[in-house]
Structures are given as structure tokens and as C-alpha cells.
Amino acid sequence: MADCVFCRIAQGEIPANKVYEDQSVICFLDANPASKGHTLVVTKSHYENFTTVPKDLLSHAIQVAQMVSQACLAQLGATGVNVVTNVGRAAGQSVMHFHLHVIPRYEDDGLGQLFTETLSLPSDQLLLLADSIRQGM
Ligand SMILES: [Zn+2]
Image (cartoon, rainbow, N blue to C red):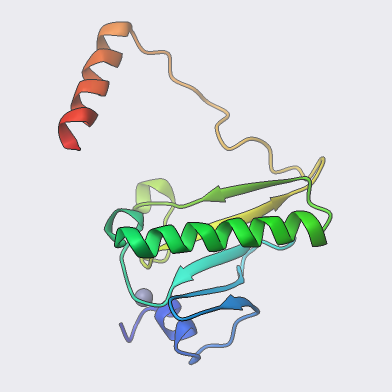
């Protein structure tokens, strides 16, 4: 897609701080990093988000994210990693081209926990939610 920034990076039209590349994925530093070494794992083919990526390609992307995570732990002094993907604007997806965030975490990095607020739902509602998700699979 000509107007997609990640497609343009994958095609070499826009420079990026590349970490890894193979036939189907490219990894580069996030231009707006949450932490030192924040890396994006991006499929070279355009898929809108996590829910639309073919399973084999998704499997490969998560394996590459594991490799990047291991490298961040080994090389950057990170003591933790968050691996995150956002689906849709409600979840904070800003580029509508599938990507995994590998966010190295450091002691006292100030980023906090991903989920600071939790819901307290009645058990009947939990049963309905689980049933709805089951019916969608
Ligand atoms: Zn794209």
C-alpha cells in the first residue's frame, strides 16, 4: 500500500534503524520509543492487524519477536520485556499495518504495569462473556 508507512519502510523507501530482516518480516527501532531498544516486528506484506495475519506468518513473526526479546535481555541490560500488539484505534493502534512491539523493560523505568485498572464483574456476566467468545471461535 503506497500510503502505508510500514510498507514503505519494508520496501526501503523510508529509512529506519533496522534490527533484523528476512524474507517475510522486518524489525526496526520504534520512532517513538517507550523504552531503550523498543523494536517493532513488522510483516513485509500488508495486513491490517493481528486478527488478519495468516497463521504461518504470525507464527514466524512471534518467533522473531522472541529472538529480539532474547537479544534485548542479553545485550541491553533489560531485565524484562513486554511483547504487545494493538488491534484497532480503541486499543491504541496508530499504524494500520500489523506489528508486534518488543518493549525492553528496566528496573524503575517508570513505564509501570500495562494493566493498572481492572474490572470487577459479576459471575453471571463472566459466564456470558466466556460463552460469547466461545461462540466466535
Ligand atoms: Zn502496510
